Image 1: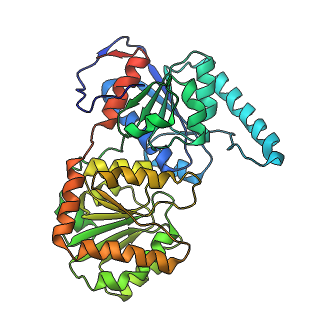
Image 2: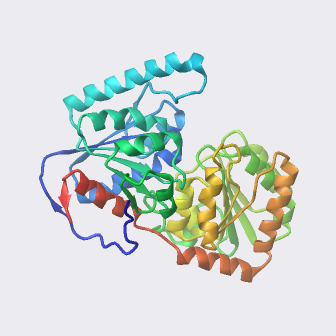
Image 3: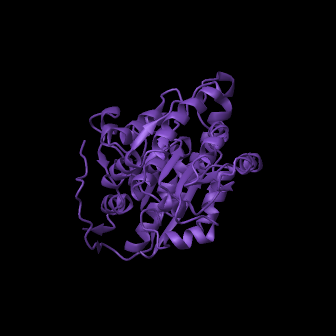
Length: 391
């Protein structure tokens, strides 16, 4: 295994050929499985302007929403996740055969130059098909601990691109791993809008500290509930305002709770302006998905994490520990009792919003460990692997 040097220099590439380039991205189901691919697609077009993309994703609405907003077309698959329930195996294998057959027909008629798996079960049919056909393959692994699909696929691809060095210990020694960070969407860490412009646009006060609360692309009711229980505490600190992404189901009651305690809050079901909100945030409360961590590091903002508690491998907690070790994150363990979760979060939150020195130290650590060029690092390796450019 190898790790890409932290000080990699992305130099001007020399195209090896000028034929139209096709790259297939496979994966989906959550924003975390789509945003890194979209970031790479954007960065790669700057190097190879004539590139064409195909996104093999899932039938979930979140995939359609994210890809359509990015101007990309979704190519749905019949594939389903592998289950431990034997009575569902026939359905899984039927869906698998349909997906691999469709990929094979597609790749024969319009051979891709590269197939990129972004993780989870939706990556598997295209990656396995491409590997058998001798098409170069890459697997994105933004979590510290590879998921079940990535563990199975890692030995089938030409290279695994990891966000964290510690991922190497979770994969076989003969798997090529390059540590490049996790690509983030355009704008994170490079927002062109000023703080004043963003605040004016969303009715925020540019002179107040801003707390950004998010449950990621699928939202998190437990986080919404905990924050509503802390609304009175936030109301007592008039120098703080809140931007809260609630999900559509909880929007009205969360907004009403803040209003009842005179908290200046902007509540949204979902937003494509996350990079703007993160750029003005002084503190973030969120899950600890890999893409969220990458976005935080690109902007350089600290966070209190409430890792999703129901994953068997607790991979979000392991992710969050990477930022905790850097001094840019803290963990609030979610309890089954909402009151206990709120109590734990209250202690961490009040320590920071009522102590300017503690908050300043927290923010400085986040800025010190920024990573803004993961997409460019990823592109360099992919283009060389596919024989499309020499650097």
